[in-house]
Amino acid sequence: MKSIIHRNSQLYDTERAGFQRLALHEPDLVVPAASPEDVREAVAHAAAAGLPVAVQAAGHGLPVPATEGLLINTNRLSSVTVDPVTATARIEAGARWHQVIAEAARHGLAPLSGSSPGVGAVPYTLGGGLSLMARPYGYAADQVRAIDVVTADAEPRHVTPGDDLHGDLYWALVGGRSNFGVVTALEIGLVPVERIYGGALYFDAGHAGEALRTWAAWTASLPDEMTSSIAIIPFPDAPQAPERFRGRTVATVRIAFTGGAEEGEDLVRPLRAIGPRLVDTVGVMPYTASASIHDDPTEPAGYYATHSVLRELPPAAVDALLDVTGCVVEVRHLGGALSKPQSYPNSVGNRDAGYSASLLSPGLAPGTDTTALRPAHDRARDALAPWSTGGRLLNFLYGENATPEEVRRAYEPADYRRLAELKAEWDPRNMFRLNHNIPVS
Image (cartoon, rainbow, N blue to C red; front, side, top):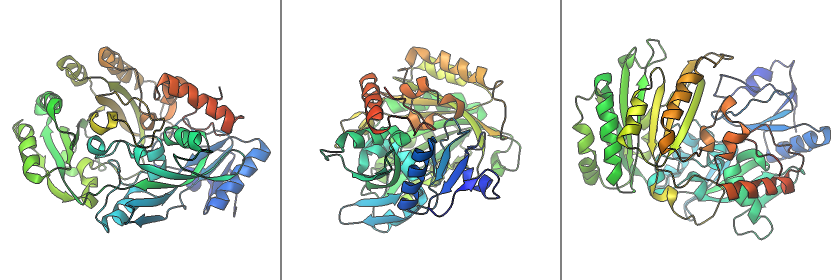
């Protein structure tokens, strides 16, 4: 371990900061890990000193921030190696999706990456990973072949799903994120995708209701090859907003279809009939251009978010979403391969869901008091309650909303009990608790 950074170090702020800036980690110590051995030594140091441990790569999905303990920054562990023969990639703990996408594309392959290519690939995958190709291929977590992890006893372990010794640990890690150790690398499966039929359709505020109603009805009869979402976005009149949308509210339907272009054109025709389009980027694209589908912000920002997991999206639920004001509203279509049995069972829950509905309050300064934001989020969640499964998606639990009860909702009840039992086995002191924590049973 080359260095330990203390609170009074000039490097402290740089090393603790991630993408989510509403609240930052404030640990006693930060270890900028440059190798698996650095991680092992950091865990050993924390164990000896009785310190809790947090882990951060890019920091998009920051749960309750650390106010003590030791933060392991895995940003420097960023190598990506693709094996085209086995269609797999070895990705280190700090690798971003854009690196994996670029390396895989050289061999006509693609990972199950999400909407934002700057997200850390490993934590995203271990939390489930709702990809742009989720309906044909399932969760990114379902593609995990092997894990290199340092457990609470500071021992490095190579874990696979068929391992008689560590099979339970594999199951817990894939879905449990950093609760059972610090993952230094994953081996993941890639899919044979070079190009997709995808992009986004943008409509003005006057057609937002029609767009959401049409999209909701459209999703009822789609093939699994089509993954889509819709967002209603009130853009600020500010330099950070796209110039063409500043000060406007727009509805955008995002699609990624892994079938042929001709079939894709036929499928998208009802969406193009909604009304005048401000922008239409839908067409055949290389998967390397897939970041343009959602066109997520790339600069660090503060945001407050909540979500609901829905069984269905009937007209009354659509009406409830259209009543929301002042927030970004996003609905994602789930189902397809997300709900089917996996080759490598894991602890990712809520596979029976049909949709996720998220509310996002963006553009918040660090330390913003979110009290005034909560009522709108709570009203929306209450309004959607008749169609809610009661579940949560772990990667969508941010900040103060990553409470123990909310984390519990990310798993099936029997799986959560098993995770708590395995926590007692692998981390009996709950050293890995500065996260989406599963307490010791």
